[in-house]
Amino acid sequence: MVLKMPTKELIQGGFAGVKRSLDRTLNTLTPAELKWQPCHDANSIQIILLHMARAEDTNVQSRLQKKAELWESEKWYEKLNRDAKDNGGHYTLEQVNTFSVSDTKDLLAYFEAVRSKTLEYLKELSEEGMERKFTMPAFGPPPAPGAPPRPPMELTVASMLLNTVTHLVQHIGESSYIRGLQRGMDK
Image 1 (tube, one colour):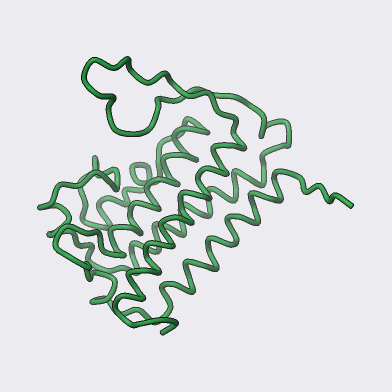
Image 2 (cartoon, one colour; image 1 turned 90 degrees about the vertical axis):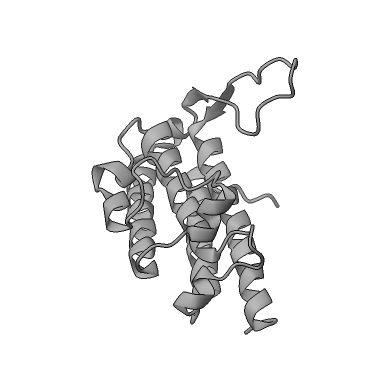
């Protein structure tokens, strides 16, 4: 027997799983643990959280809906004392080592605001809307010198949302690992 789940339910379940996993990973961590780096050139959980929230905000608000990101429209960069152009990634070594937000609760509030808008968009999205195609620039580092540029990617809304879920899950794994380095297994 093959069970078929509608795409929308699958994606909603993915985002619910991300929330559960993130809550479990962050549970009882102290501000110092959230800022801790395994070594001087590694991300802290706090950096990873900002990256996750910024990626979801960009993917859902800007790329899929062609709206201003909450980062800009609700001035989250001001609330988090960050530069308006901070995209949550590709930091220099100096930026990694000086990264800080005033309060992780504010960072999590931004993440929750982004998630709320994501779920609102998903609720209104029809199954047909999931199949809408759009084009975006290729991800990844620039091609090697002399190599042709990467072509833009054509994606469906559903594939972008699933990509967003898997991206978030990867970063929760990193955060969980950093937690384990600090506390030991299952602590």
